[in-house]
Length: 305
Image (cartoon, rainbow, N blue to C red; front, top):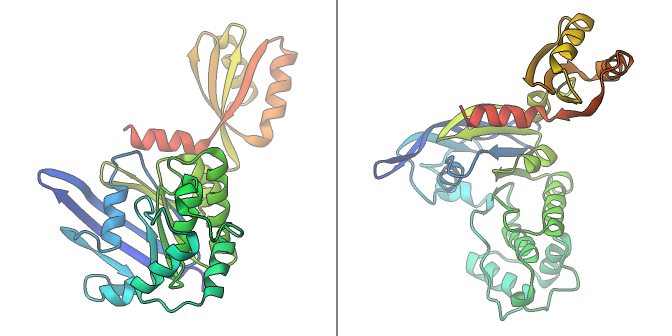
């Protein structure tokens, strides 16, 4: 059932000596989400994720997963969770298939060889099952790591910066795999990243964290406000006159003069063609007219405050 909380973090805190890595983090993940956990490097994302996986103990706060208290029912909860919080590590002289066999045996997971082949096919490694992992690219190892996390059929998957260090093709492959986890296997995925584009392309809900505190949580589409955009206009000259013209044409528009040749304004998208035509008709020479991503502006504003 959608809109069913699968994970709830309440007022989490964690310090390392005198350094407070997580000051006050609270958010909720719904069943079926691809949930973006966004923040700059050092914001506290990885520390929070390690607390969620019981790899480190928080100083204060509560974590509930599947409606159970992680502190009290750790083992029962973690059997239903899969994760990659560090770069996956494998026996490089063994094949992908043999690595999965060993991991399954160590983890006490009963799987058939057919199931292992199916997992490798799902993550895009069909035909490479018997190749040594030492010859795999970073992206292939990351996908093999996801296959490893799927062996015990978890309901919740936690991925910490899964595209870091990948080349463009590797990023695309991991991104497509994450979407398939949700759409084909009905997994709930929590995805941390410091890259805004990853969250925009993948997540339906997100939280922004900065300096160990949550800044905002919500639907990605709502935070982006798709009906409205920030528009950057570069003119050959006289931005002040252009600003006066625009203010007369659209009195409700918020605008500011950035330089003698540039303007920035917030405008509803359907008004942009008329604005452009009006400026051209009034003999303003437009050098560039560029929409800016609302979420990017918001992210920068929130994390640099």
